[in-house]
Every structure is written in C-alpha cells, then in structure tokens.
Amino acid sequence: MKYLIINPYHNASHGIANYIKNLEKSLDGIEVLTYENKKNLNAIQFRDEVYNYVTRHFGYDDIIIEAPEAKSFNLTSSF
Image (cartoon, rainbow, N blue to C red; front, side, top):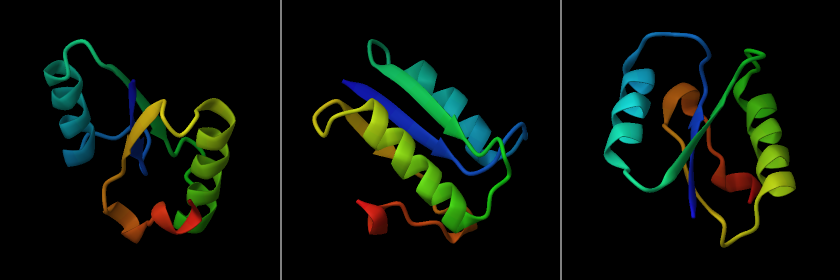
C-alpha cells in the first residue's frame, strides 16, 4: 500500500510542506509519495492533472490519497 499526498503548492515552506515532512517520518513502513503542483496550475487544471496521474499509475486498491483543502480544491469530484 502506498500513501499519496497531494500538495497544491511547489517549493514552498509552509504548513502543508511541514505537515508532509512530519507525516513521512511517522508513517514508518509505508511508502509515502508526494505529488506537487510544479506547474503552478489553477485548482481545476491541477485536479485534472492529479486525476490523470493517479489513474495512470495506480489501481483502486494500491493507494491511499490525502489532499489538503488548500486553494479550495476538491479531488473527489473527478473520481
């Protein structure tokens, strides 16, 4: 099982980045992946990019996805 954390920001020092670092340390034995908004896309574009990434790389039973409520983005509407 893999744990994917969606980060709507890229290369920033903020609460989400700190949360991710601490979560990675605490989830011993679980592979933690991070998908960042490296292209600085708006919420709708980034949601579509994340959807495409997840559906190409993982099955339904392969991954747990966590996404913060930053930038008012909602991944569940696409799944």
